[in-house]
Image (cartoon, rainbow, N blue to C red; front, side):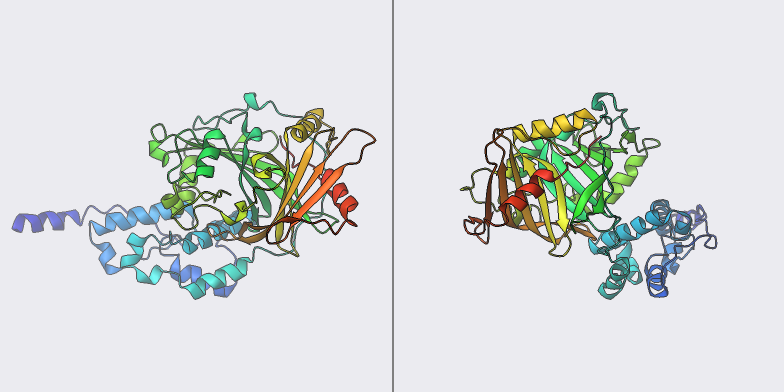
Length: 440
């Protein structure tokens, strides 16, 4: 017993330091928000050193020190103010999202430090300050096509992950309207991922699944709709539980801008990816709720309501590839334009031409505009996802001199509307005039 006590006492001198310093460039927020951050977050996410008496005792000290240094590396409110405004805003959104999902503070830490828990009232104050749905979008600019990039020659990420040159041809798994950073996202999946999503076998996702998340800047149009504007980036997740066992079973990559420049300065950028996706470890680290009619015993694993399309429709557009999307901010609806193979040929030809924006659809092309009500994304604060389908509009192009056909299915049962024909020509012009979301 005496020997054990001596060892315990000796260990108290094995105490690497926790650096502390006054804040240099703190994040600039209103006092009410700043008080919440100071009270609930600064013990780990600042340069201040705040330890309870029991934190001072080794080995607890070692654990707390590791937690603090890791937390500072990911988010440090004492120096966050030195970053661009957009980066500050993104950090606050991520913090709110981590709190909302119960990932922050970590349960192991909060059990012994209950004062670090953020109350529902304080979280509401933070969310109200961030307010992701302000009408501050830029006006739509005239979009011109870029010189197409040879996707096969895009450099790999710094961790060795390669961009799949086929990602643009994958099918839609879901879409997101991100009010936190004014972007739209398409989440596309390869054949393995699509089969898993449509069968509900995504907890975990099977090896070989590849998910591509494509982002565009939102732009307000003169029509009052929010359209997909400038291409921002594409992110890729590749499931391989053996190869990527050290990074939660997923390979990660991000390529930014029309030249698809790899994001990571070195392979350590993956830590940013895994820490961001940590709250979704119960869903195999994937935030997306696939639009799927499959059954599931788990709540909020699949977006089944958005997939509720009657089999009696002339076509099933969710089996086609998406072309573009827009949001009506007044009605809080999101619409995605899909096209059959013939329509996709026209989209590809317009892209490859380097100058066309609106495709010239030839005979046999079918376009489907599917409109959903939106709902808040349960996995990401500041985002909205498709909910109940409200209407499906089909436009079929024909030979020159023949009339383009239009049909609309709407209402609770998505039954065909045969009565309102006055607006058909206007809707056909809108649908045929939608420019594809720009791709590199």
